[in-house]
Image (cartoon, rainbow, N blue to C red; front, side, top):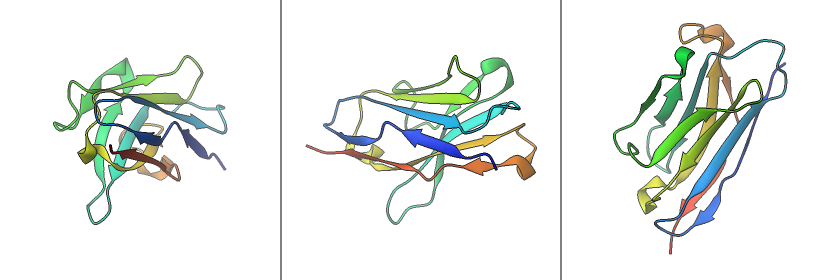
Length: 119
């Protein structure tokens, strides 16, 4: 069974940066839909960024201009570069992938990595 491994979370001061990484344990096939979600305590999980076929990316309004999602050079890897971090960005960030946007059967979720933005 394919698993996702996230890394890069941690504590950072407001205005700082973090780079999250996500990699699949197997690369026998490609995930053409890769996304980052986040969930803060007491709040609903929201999609932060997604990148699909053609490397087209979409972002939540709250992170536009600050976050960048990108595919790694290694197959089935994805990154989230987070700049100008705000306390409101504090949440558990989850990697989510699918073989295709419509292929819900192939959905995989990482365990999450904590991002804390605080002085």
